[in-house]
Length: 620
Ligand code: ADP
Image 1 (cartoon, protein in one colour):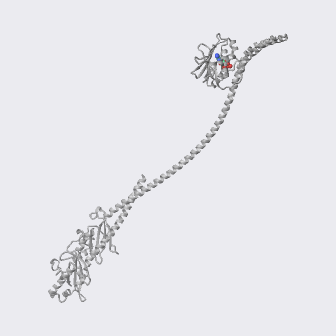
Image 2 (cartoon, helix red, strand yellow):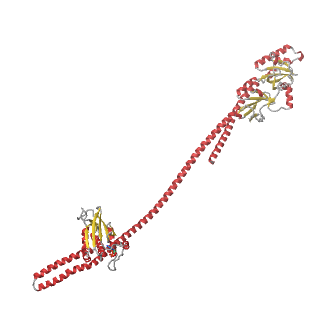
Image 3 (cartoon, helix red, strand yellow):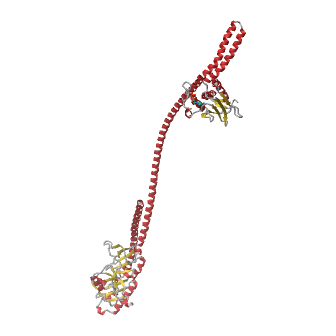
């Protein structure tokens, strides 16, 4: 808003300055032009008048004129007067003046050029009151404006004394018409006027200005004018424009700007330039009134131009400023961008460092975790092995029992064989040793599965026929099954696909099965009906599901809740560690399977073991 106001003010100032300058320039040009015209007009007017300046002097030299003054005035011969009249008439016609006449020392006209114009002949008139007459009578050359008494026509009068020796005897007068000057006015193109020595307008392009005075006449001047009859019988009015005449004393010129209020001289009230000069060798002054409308119009044009220029300059300035501002803004933006970039780089560097540190930390933690996992796995393996050995320990009674019978038999057979050899019955001894051989083989058959079960086996998965693993488990538990008189029922064949094959480790599967079946046998201890049901089938070709169900007391809610918790056992100390189910589920999960427990509706517990099915079973 402020900027707009400032711009408007600047425009106004420029317009004003332009107007002022234009006005001054226009005024100067007008001045020069008017001066030129003034000079031209003045020269013309002077020429017209001064051409006849010496005419009066010439007249008084003429013998025919001089003859009029010789002899007594009363007896002036009429032929002399006629000769003088004739001379003056011819002279007048020749030189183109208005009238030429001579007067005697009392002011009476003696001879005149205009006898043919009775109303302008001056003949017999009394000129004694005329200033030009008095001037000449006193011996000087007179030059005066006056309105002629005879024809009431204004003219310029040159007068010259006519001497007889040293004595002035009369006056010669030449009247010059001012009509030529009047006619020249229109050539000026502007209103003009000529003032005489009384500041009375004697000639003007505007008739209404004629015989008006520029300043009020003093009473003396009025009386004087009345007396000299200078303006005939005309009443002098007041000049209509308020023009205080301020003549330059040194150059006798006038240059004033007039603001006319009620005059229609100036178009749109622009005012008038009044210029004047004195006509050389005369007491006349020429005034020219030039309309300032043109100057004003030109000044307006200059003002508008200046405003336009200022507007253009301001626009250019604005554009430059805008460009600079835009450049500065760009620079600032660039710097901000660079700063941001630097900050970003810094942040990125810091983050990268932090990330690298975090990464290193993570790697370290990962390494630790891997280490911990390895340790855990080793511990788990050790645990599994420990659990396995615990089972072996539990089964050792059975094994001992199994081995006791063949051992006893071997001892007997060995004793008998020794007796047979002492008697020399080698065949008998041989027969006994053969039986011992068979028995040892049988004992090896008993021990071998224990050895296989107890050893640390590789845990890599492979295709394991569930039936084989179950047979091994039942073999190891055979002694207990028989001791508890448990009825074992197996359902291992899938319809159409044969026995299921799981993708796990055989030794581990046997361990899980021994656990589940061992628990089932324990649970059925003392139960009226002891029935173990083991089912295995393949679900969707994806998973193998093995169910171990018993007819024991089932799982009360408290047991069900803590079943898979380490060291949870309901068995008396020394009988159970409370780890079997935990380890079994761990094994199942290791191979991507699971283990769950539930109660059977008909009584007893059922454990369901899931394992992934071998994709391409190698065995039926
Ligand atoms: P342990 O046999 O050493 O006690 P387990 O983890 O094998 O450890 O079993 C935990 C407990 O789960 C057993 O003490 C028993 O109370 C209960 N249990 C396991 N199997 C059965 C089952 N078939 N019927 C009833 N209870 C069972």
